Image 1 (cartoon, rainbow, N blue to C red):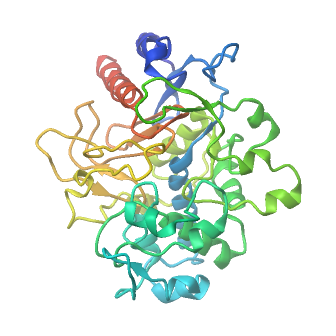
Image 2 (cartoon, rainbow, N blue to C red):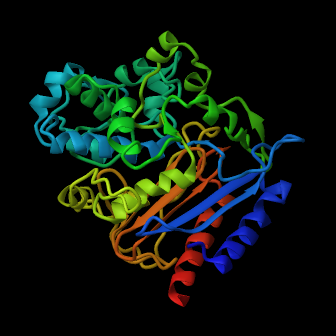
Image 3 (cartoon, rainbow, N blue to C red):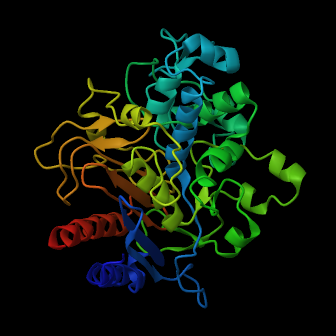
Length: 415
């Protein structure tokens, strides 16, 4: 049941940002659910676009969720592992289906391509330890790709296939295209396109109809506009969409050419996405439909810290190799006292309780257009804040995520 006091608090918080043009955030949606999948609050604020006459933001608004897709792709891969169709720790199985990875080179610090010294497993692809990077975070990779350049938001498999590694496999965590590769391995091993798998084995069993890599006509009608704060500016303006190809694809032939990106391909309504999170709160079983889409032991495996030897991985900072895509951030999730932090399959783990009130081993992650989700299995609550504004790391959206997540925990304590 919606907590009316919480609803009002969140509405006031969001409106303080979306009503102020100087923030550059035209619209936001925030939604939180409990372990029964019941909405604690569901709040739209502002407008779908910054231009005059744009419709108000509402709970039917569809967002490109970018890297929030990674959770869905990882769940798909883990379902295939359960079925014996994929293997987590068998590099030769990966090479059987993705022979490109057997001989992929490593771009070293001097800009030279050298042989990889370790094998690549599906677990590495899902935990960002396979050695891949992203061109908008890694200047070395960005420069190596030029004069053509890389663009992982082009919905074209070729951008992923031609990228070298930037680290030796298994040596260090770095965010990159590993989960795109995991999706490619799943498709080739099963003969099922990644989006089709997600529809058949995740969204449909959960009763969700507005999470899709190929947005339906109804989803397109409710699409939020994309916004840009150009370097040096605080206000934003509408821009062409970051992920256009799936939106403009109309015919079957056109849709066949769209890369099903496990790293960034999905569009969704936030109030449906959080039902996926509610399912993870319940050890892989939907509290709404009763569908068991993952085994409890699989969910436990996803929540295991994959990089215990790198407790400060998130304090190395985020570079702004492409300032139009991301702000430079000193660390991903500051915590007082700098406790150890971890990475699961495939999300950030705040191992110690957080300042907002979140419990131990809370999972969270984000999308580059400033969307953030969290899933707290200890306290049985999850949520998401969604916007469509570039570059990543917008201080106003981050602030609203933190303030409203804290409001959720305060409301839980008072009930």
